[in-house]
Amino acid sequence: MLAKVHSGSIHGVKAYPVEIEVDVSGGIPAVVIVGLPDTAVKESRDRVKTAVQNSGFVYPEGRLTVNLAPADIKKEGPSFDLPIAMGILAASTQIGSERLGDFIIVGELALDGSVRAVRGVLPIALAAKREGRKGLIVPADNVAEAAVVEGISVYPVDSLAALVKFVEGEAEINAVTLDMGEMLKCARSYPVDFSDVKGQGHVKRALEVAAAGGHNIIMIGPPGSGKTMLARRLPTIIPDMTLDEALETTQIHSIAGLLDPGTSLVATRPFRNPHHSISDAGLIGGGTYPRPGEVSLAHNGTLFLDELPEFKRNVLELLRQPIEDGHVNISRAAGTMTYPARFLLAAAMNPCPCGFFTDPQRTCRCTPSQIQHYMSKISGPLLDRIDIHADVPAVKYRELAGETTGESSETMRSRVGAARGRQLERFREEKIYCNAEMTHRQIRKHCRLNTDGQELLRTAITELGLSARAYDRVLKVSRTIADLEGSDEILPTHVSEAIQYRVLDRQLWL
Image 1: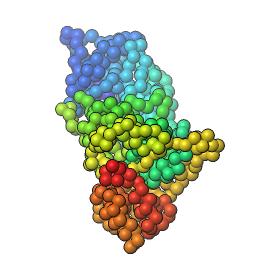
Image 2 (image 1 turned 45 degrees about the vertical axis):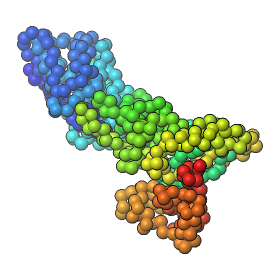
Image 3 (image 1 turned 120 degrees about the horizontal axis):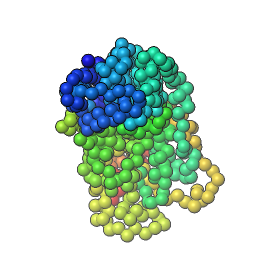
């Protein structure tokens, strides 16, 4: 007898429906799974058999054929265990199949018949809504994640036996609903705050400018000057995520298996801090069957690269596409995946190999050629994509010992939010969201300088040694500084501050 059960699988950051056909026929006992299953799917035959028997049902003798359609897309993971088990029970007439067509079912089976959490439930819930299904049946640990999708009933199950009773009408499972507004409000909290940071007022200002305009930033200073501490607080001053941004971010973390049980939404800006020994696949994404990398896990948040020159050069060069395009394309034999990767890049580095080139209290032992070699590890094209270079000196004792604290993240975030609002209004017809995304044409339109501003910028380029690549960056940052002050016109003071954020320009630095 033939039975059909509906499920779903992940391709990139989206899900697609999978129809599971199970046929039980006579012959030599065997289980055949077709439809491009991976190893985890093929192994489900043993998990399902034991789970069915331990749940008090009869595993049918004879030939079992399981087809996963569409057959031309690779299926992976253990999420098909539960729907395959239901298909076997329906095909062997142990349960009725009338209600199975109303639901999409996902879940991994333990050998005792209990249901374990799986990855990618949120994208599958969105796909179930698009398909017009009445409900989605998921493991109990995944229910909060799936219930954020409005317009579809989500039913949690903890065992195969419980699901059978629900489908047969012998027991009731209440659909789970969530208050999205209240959930977002409660989840928007950070364990750190800028008020924790002593001193470094000018660096906080640079980070505020970076957050306000979406500008990538690099901090240069000796060890112990607080670069990492400052970077960790950068997400706290970026405006709160919208529901759409939270759903995008949660989908990626769900696919990567990074959501804790019971977590429904990633409502705080992600902060990813990969080690400098990371591989290109770890940073950009990849693998035999592509998975999202750190640039995608940082989507709508901050990607922090500490000790930037210590990263492999070929790994850093891979950042150029996601920084420029806001997404990353990964091509493998198994297929081509596109993952979103719109993030704010924050990097930190020492000014020289020993770290004390700019520290007045410590003696630098590096030769000019060593410093030049160290700085050259960062390519010009990558520096072209970093708008702000901030010098981070060592904190003085009186600042560390003082009782005064700096501004809170909430105060800074309110100014950043106001500046972002001006940018959204400015670019409402141009499909960009912040000053850092402006093209050369848009820079000419929105970043016009008066005579004094033009003269100041000319002096900086011709006499201070600023490179030509710094020209557009200075104009973009000047526009953001003006937005922070609520000014429609870019004044010379705004240009002057923007010029100060080019300390890593080669001719000025060395």
